[in-house]
Length: 430
Image: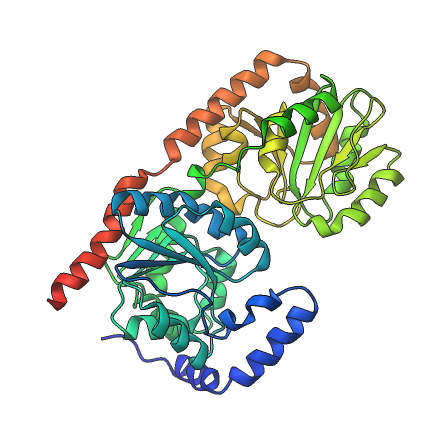
């Protein structure tokens, strides 16, 4: 029997009355540019596209990271079952703008509804999913409960539950158990998550350890002309990349770069491009010349930093770099994916904060595919050594590529496993 949860009951009662408040909050967010004004009705449970006949798999990825990690699986599901339709939902504008153009013909994108009774029921009444897949661990209680109540088989894929998230759920243990026990399958990306979701109330036998879907993701390739133009602009100078940096990281990265020979170019890609103005000022204050991608500026022979304050061009920057420092790791952000630079031939450096990809960084370290650095001085030393040693860079890149290949899931097998949940539920009803 599923555990009773007074906290969940209270939440559901509140969400039953929250539609007017949700509409007002969405309108406010739209005025601030945080919602797509032209598609606000989707967030309120009024989809903008029709539901075609046939089987439909719904995948929810909260934001750009989760949605991107789902893309290889979307392709695998379509290849495993011709005629299947896939609905991918996200909650952020950035995810919608970047993911929708990458979807195969079998898939469409919509915004996820807000977690009110009216919005969720409108969404489910329209789409009638045959299988629901949650990527990682964003669980909206009303959405989980209503989907389960309709008998839709549900799985959490690429699940990851951090220590901090676990502590938050432990404040409402019966609510956590009431939600997690509704999942037919939970495939975790690390052993810690396997243990944590089990302790929080996932059904025995439903939790398993899988491989990280993000290891199968490759950024959209740049056009040949864009790649050629960028290479011409750099002109054969040594290049290193700081990928997905956060506030507080740029200062030590710039300090390390200032210690390198003057012909070295840093391509600096902030996680949030809207920080570009502030970062450009910081670069100038560090005494380094800068060209800004957002302004259409092209590096010349005097440029020390190319500030890539745009979205959707990571594949270009990885292809230009000899060494990549992965951001979110010098500040307490848990680190970003090492799989993309590993796939595109980079030697990898990173800081101490790697909780988001701990198994991957441990494997890369053990294989010699990546090196951890603690501060600017150590980074400058490592960069100087690697940029001057082609063979060392190549050995690291080869080791990193091997680790990534070993950690990539068998996508056809995963797709068939998940579709089996749908088939078994349908056969049980017959």
